[in-house]
Image 1 (cartoon, one colour):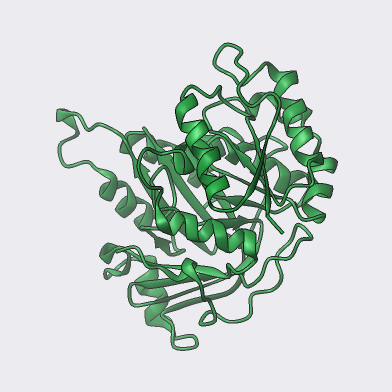
Image 2 (cartoon, rainbow, N blue to C red):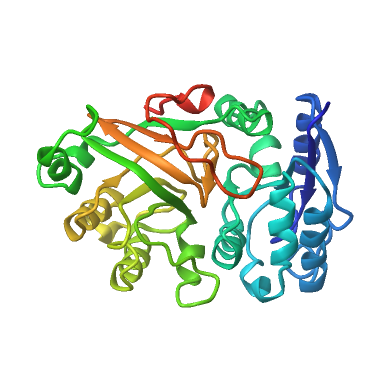
Length: 343
């Protein structure tokens, strides 16, 4: 039986109609049944329809019975309607088996779902940006998406930066204290959460920000200069959010332009500053963000995280269709395409 994918637009208006059409065709070519929301291509100012239109689209996505509700694109628009979303309907949809997938502005809805109802969703691709690219979509992204729809995805592995394990870093300090199950660093259970840094920071202090302690927080962003990244991280640091986590995982920070007066200040500077300010490990190079190669990550799931040398493995086992993850069962048990390493 074909897996059913529901395409809707909760944020910005679809500007690249060709990419939208290519994405739909690509998904159909992969064997999916694709249903397009009636307002998916609407436009109101910069949004995919006015606020009421987009709330209605989200409500229809929740009622669709689809295996996956996939955003057409990110942009901006969800934070302004978080107080209007049908959280009970969204939670019920997830319990019945609908997986909500997206990134970027979608972080706002994912955080709100987690904060309001504890509902799990997936950080992953968008229709146009990923499936609708000119040429061939990234094979790892497609394989991870297939893992989700087939129920085979159990975790992801990647290679962290050399600076992450350098002397004086929190990870090096943790490794020096003890070896756990042969790993330099090993978390047996922690809640995975996060997403786009700018969107997440905009939710601090609101009812839509998950109050998670002892979690693994992952972050990515696009078009933000390293000093802006540092400024946003500083807010999370001073708010106590970072110190409450067991680990911080940084994905891809892309598409920004350095200026001459930056001098030697760069993204690596920001990471080194963060590692110096925290006692919890900071891992980099997670293959997730506004990049072609992106894995899918279960926001709100209990995960296991292990690091051996520069090899990191995040494992969540089989996430059930109840809106919450099953317990992780062993860091060495992941299989499938999520095990690809990004070098």
